[in-house]
Each structure stands twice: as C-alpha cells, then as structure tokens.
Length: 219
Image (tube, rainbow, N blue to C red; front, side, top):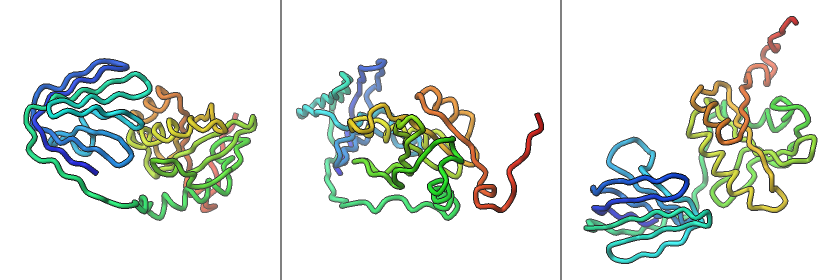
C-alpha cells in the first residue's frame, strides 16, 4: 500500500462532477489499484475514490486516474509532505461475530428462508476484493449474490455493490442480482439497496435456529 500526504485539489468527472479545493490530504493507493482520498476526519469514508481497474498517469504535480467506464479523477498536487509504501501481505479477512457467522451458516443451509427457489452454489464465494457471503441460483437459474449482516447499514450495501461489480465480469455469472440480508436493516440502507437495483430481506435469527416459531398472520 502506498500512502501519500500531499497538499492537493481533486476533480472528479463521471456520473457527475465534483471538486475538492486545495487542502492537505491523504492519498491511499491499494495493491489492487483502488485509490482513495481522505481528510483528517469523517470516520472511515474517503472524500473521493476510484475503484480498480484503472489507469494512473502520474507526474510530479498531477495524477490523472481513468477507468473503463470513462470516469476521470484528477489530483493536482502543490506539495508532497510524505510518500511511503508498505507491504501488508495477504489479509486473512474479517472474522464475523458469532451471531453473524451463525446467521450466514443457517441461511446457507436453507437459502429459501431468503427467497423461494434459491439453491446454494457456494459459501464465501471469492472475488478479487474479498468473498461474498453466499452465491446462489434462483429458480430461473440466475446467479444471486447475498451479503449477510447482523445489522444492515449503508456500508454493507456498498460492500455488496462492489462484489456485484466484480462478479458481473464473469460470463458465467452475468446478470447477477444482489440481495442484502440482515436481522434489522436501517431505512437508509433499504433506500440505497433499492436505488442500486438490489433487494433486501430481514430475517429472524431465532426463527432460523428453531428457538421460536415464525409469526403467524391471519388473512
């Protein structure tokens, strides 16, 4: 990973246009080619970023990053304070808490709890940016990527969107759809999932593990 602290301004041109005025920022270049620009605040979210694959044309005072979608991120640098690189090695991945891991296990055993007709292909299906929790096929044979969380928030939807982008490149999975699953999904995450063309499902952990019966509804 390369970490550059520099005084810079940033312009993005793609689905929309955005401008960051000149300030001191952290430019993070990951081994997979992703580039993210951070300020000293705002939690973990970058101010702007460009996902891999992309092409970087770098000169001392300007970086121009482009991707196959025609998006461009231009970083104009007036001063470099620090430029370091670190080899982090292979990451073992996120260790889920007991409830989340068991929830994934239960849904893998019976994916019809998410949607009728789903058949499991594989748990922890690999992509080049990490594994998606469940890969299934629906009754029509269409691939379905499922991300499972204990609590469904916006970052989980974003994570699934990144997986779908990578999986769509596989001809055997083309047309894949995404389902975001959690015990409780926040309203903002629901809205974002629907805007990204995904569906979302809330599941009851206690019902899945047989600790209680499902709620009955009279019609």
